[in-house]
Length: 108
Image (tube, rainbow, N blue to C red; front, side, top):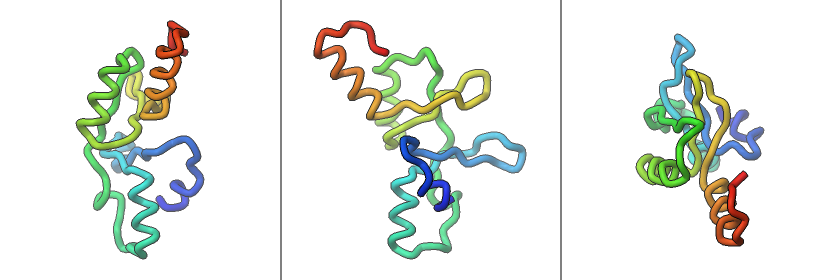
């Protein structure tokens, strides 16, 4: 998992899959970096993951904000028809806020 964390540039969470291929949880990449810095190589994904949670493509910005606060993550997967199709988080919320504050109207 640490190798995946090092490669991730924009993604801030990693889904943890069970043996059946279905998502079981999410791991915050910042937590993995902390574990690596503290030489806690004995820890596995189960030790640091939270229950899998996501938003759907049609989720409002308010709903995304609430979910992020509920689970304490900075990013969540967007799931459509059982597939992860993207990620949304604090960066996207900040961008939307900036665009709306500038009077841009629609958020891309």
